[in-house]
Length: 294
Image 1 (spheres, one colour):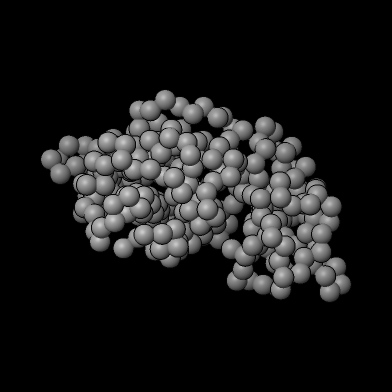
Image 2: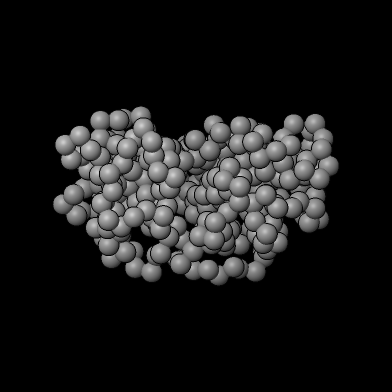
């Protein structure tokens, strides 16, 4: 039974890991991820086309997209359950019950944000995609190979509203923001803006007024790497940020995903605004508070 944020973090750890690993495959073309690890200044698109071919990548995306949606939906489902249990603890909830309470405004994301507009919109996204989840579970879902749309039929045989590829990606990002938000004790202002940006993408399914934060709310992931200097590892973000701002003008929120030379299993994560602009020596044994392993 989910009673605390810690319970939720434990219950969603694997799903969060999967989403954060798989999402970059789908980010190509959505201006939400830049690979700036190349020191010569070239921007390298995130993707795996060079390894397995464009047609194979398209097929892989079509195969992975429903699983991406299902994983994201599970995180939202458990977040709804957590919020309900904080008010009325129960060992189990039926999906139909959670959907109805979400639609009735009985789900309060107080551990995440004070914005009732965000509460309402997350609940609406959840309720609007219950049938999509059922289609996936009962193997009646399909993906249009030309558009990437997620299609299916409800229990009565009626076609559900197709979920576009952009909406599927937004669902995954919403789930990541929600999961990370509960883990960090609430959303920062920039994460709240990014959440609004992603929720707006799903407006065709929620039919709620847009938050209309525009690209200012969009959060872009930048892939970069530490620079070895003798025995030290240097984090130097100034040039990287200047390149990112030139490539994507108007964006102000950047996450840094940082490769560690010689370490193939881990990366570092930081929000750009928390990182010193001057070159900084990084002690990998004792990280500063603004830097974490991912």
